[in-house]
Length: 232
Image (cartoon, rainbow, N blue to C red; front, side):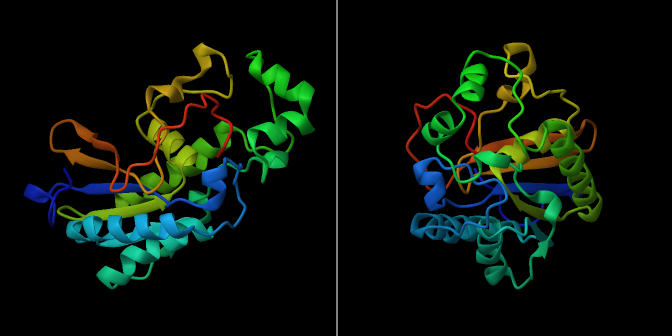
């Protein structure tokens, strides 16, 4: 359950919040850096989640500058009286030539590349941002956010599912690479974050930063049976 008010005993807290649903999320189009707005469900998700997250009395709200994240952040800042601080480092993976494509469209456009991907080969999609670069920028912004949140405060960071998950792994020093093979899929220790779900980090006085809640949701979505990690 989500907490109320400031963290107890001067604990520092960071809430990592994924944007609400978009039409492209609904149909499975890779968004990447495309500036896609929230759909009606996404607007409702952000409004409901904001009521819950506002009880944390956030000291600040940082957000990706992409519209779907910015609109989500603004639903919260409208309640708490802050302006969101926009940061490009919080953007989703750049998905290169896959941007705007569904899984089927990608398979049709790049059949050989898709076949190699499904076969478990290490495939680089033209123009796609590699995980090492996403880890670097996400780790930097999360470290900045943890430094910005003072004792007894909560900060909120609004971003995107794949990039946030990569950032969490980087923050806790869990290695991963771009290989689709089981040995290289360390990111799968964390399930994908649902639209408008959030993860709560708190700094324990003895053990340091911990994940105290993961993928918390206010409006659950149907679970997809598609096991592909492609859409972002």
